[in-house]
Length: 103
Image (cartoon, rainbow, N blue to C red; front, side, top):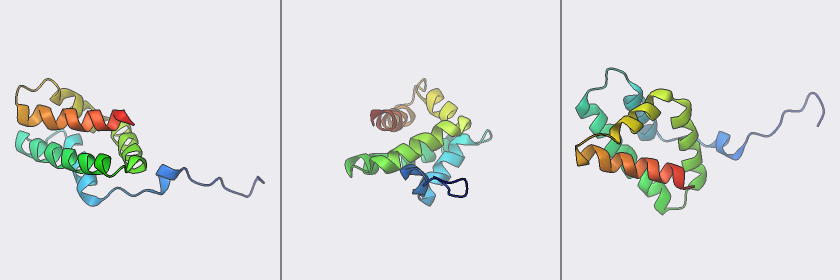
């Protein structure tokens, strides 16, 4: 490859996450996010992640995994939800983490 040529983007770099997923990551990242907003975000994200896994959309899940890891606030919130006593918060958090780490 010459100095003027650019390397082709990695497969995940060409994937654009859909708006509901982006909004969920933003809600989980928000320091001021209240419990209701967090609950809605984690439930929506769990549904989306479950659909992606069921449909073998592993490239999209890889992109989502990388996006969550790069966004420390969302990652921290997901981990914190693992200690939540409310099963309506814990179960979707487990589903998201499980599917993001499975591939």
